[in-house]
Image 1 (cartoon, rainbow, N blue to C red):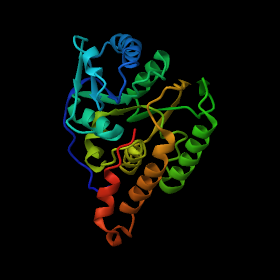
Image 2: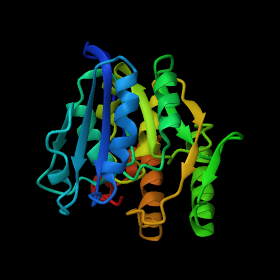
Image 3: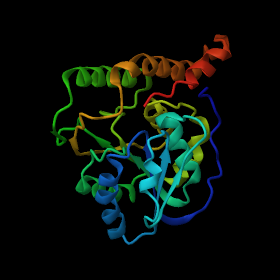
Image 4: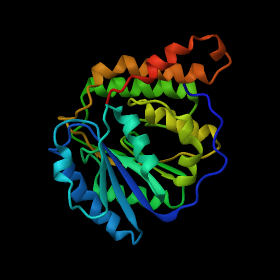
Length: 262
């Protein structure tokens, strides 16, 4: 599932920013996000594109026609968050690329800070749990306990030394994505762990940026339903990159790769 030889020949491309937005039933929120982030993209002076990968059936695509530099992709079957982001990366054409959640929880100012950091770092991620991070509408206690427990386990297994693997805003140099993306198969929310694991394993540094995060209580991400698949998936990632991978039935990894929870 996860063991792979990294691509040594990244594809050359034009300088610019490719922003991927995975969208699962986001017709009530995506325009708020676009209205927040497009002016920031315009202010960079770089060429940019926005790729919305629509993974639901609520008519989100009907809102997107005619928006400058925006295209959308709607697959024939569910991809999950990780699958949607990966598809967006495969469609992206510019030298910098990243993804944000469609709910607009990231402020325009923090989005701008991430883009600035992206230009000098191979991998820049937003973090809700650094010393200078702040919350607007704090997440429920159950979510916070689950998040901190999950992050502790991830760091114990993969030694990422990252405070927040799951925050929905991450940016990369395209050469990094071209090198590691073939190794990333995870389709659910554990995609974030998988991609950061391979970033570090390939020898790149992960730069965390503190953000002010506005928790959306109407999130389409069912935490309780996703807990078990996420824990099973990170264990599968660990096993498939360990010495015991040869002794584990291959069909189990195919099963895990089908988990597509948002």
